[in-house]
Image (cartoon, rainbow, N blue to C red; front, side, top):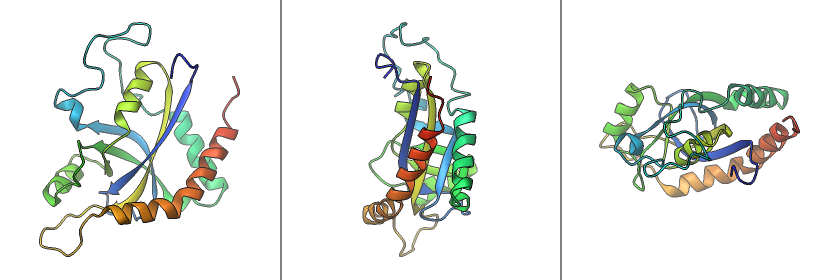
Length: 183
């Protein structure tokens, strides 16, 4: 990305809603994350560092650019869908399984709002290279917190919700991009 001259990376993902104020179809702008695979010594940056791309130990306290988050919120408000947009903390699990109810309860206690199986490696690589990042999760299912329930996470629900919001997300990204500086 850096070699191609990319200055801003905009990424999206499908995620399970942990925070009970979220509904299927809501958008969550990422303001921080927990990268469980990275905590288990499976970080995307393990191995020889290429100094031309970035430092050996990049800081991630500013992983998600404040100005891009504000711009995205402003665009949502200007286009009258701000009620669907939230900010929150994303947690990446290793997948490909959906989380157990006990795992979801633990993630809630850690302050996580949404959970998914992607995105963070790309964010880390982009920040390592000095690329600004905007990331958003589409809540495609509500995470299950109770055992012995008929409610289960399923991929069909994820695909259905994604299809319903695809046009709005595309419009949102187009309008954000249109407001970015051209330099």
